[in-house]
Length: 458
Image (cartoon, rainbow, N blue to C red; front, side, top):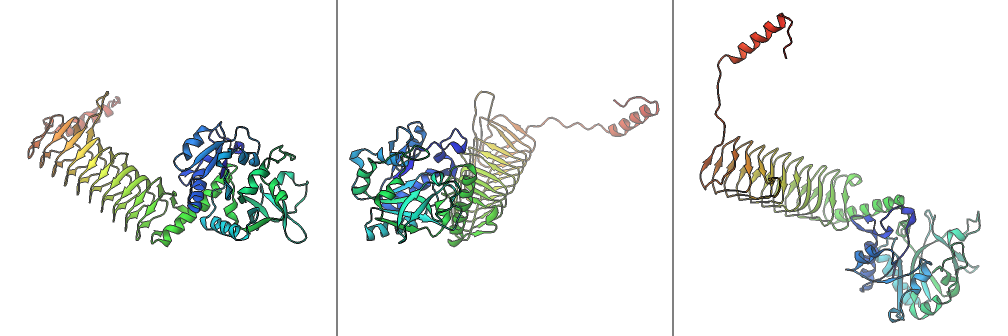
């Protein structure tokens, strides 16, 4: 069970709290994924009818039930219909506590299975307990209650143990007990924690090894704190798998990023979305990749790439932009300050600096000189440019689509090509060059005379 019907007012956002991104995905998906990982089942998520977008976000990984009114965590579980109330162990998680580790949850489930209590809960200590309920123990050290922070008497600092909001309940005792919950508290809500006093002394406690696992997201400061923790975990895992991360403090990776061994991530590199890099790649510094897949031995400088595929041994220099829909074949090279969009570039082709290749099909072994532009837009529609194998496009050429250039053709530098070019042909389009001898000297003489007369040079 994942409780995700809260309003999240402290986020001050029109976006439901559990849908705010954490390491590139809605934070609730971190919880749902962890629940499915340790139980082998689709979790059941309790949602608010005011947030149908939460249902859409979890639909592929979990089932949902509605808590029609926000009456508290106990009422959220009470919203589960009879047909879904199973008698076995019930793992209960909060949709806004995304840093739980699978091994922690497995240890809780093992403890619950060994001791068979009415409830096993996760506690946290040695950390900032602000916002957490406190465990209350009797003289024998047994947990007898959990008191929510807002219900503690003013100035009462008792309770050095915080409640992480993670439970394993015995279903045969959980479901009947939910019907008797009252709302005698500061919020007037039906707290799930009220069951702890009812089940005492049949309550087992497991202490979290890392207090950060209990970090709940209530505002954007806590979201940023969770992002930092998760990012460091992800980078640590990459390094353990054989990836060099030169400066973890300035390197950003999302949860679904995969990087092959012997790759190097230079400082200020950002890998977002489902980005997958091959082995022995070198990325950055200052590279930004989102939804990019590469082969092996790819080198990318301080460039921006989105939703594209790069085969083995592609080299992309600094300050390039590869926009969505690109496929760069093996050994393709981009110089600097070039842009490629919605194009397929054949193996071993080179695109020079300050070039712009848009909506194009470029063959193998093509040289596209510096300053070349494929003009794809006529003001109403976009058109393709098709360039065959072995074509040489000279510097500062303009290729006006729709256009086809045959294999082995040459485009002379400075040409504006508006008609198809046959294979093996040379295309030249230039205005005649005129030479006017002595013009510069005559101009300087006229300017000097005007200056002597006090006339304006304009």
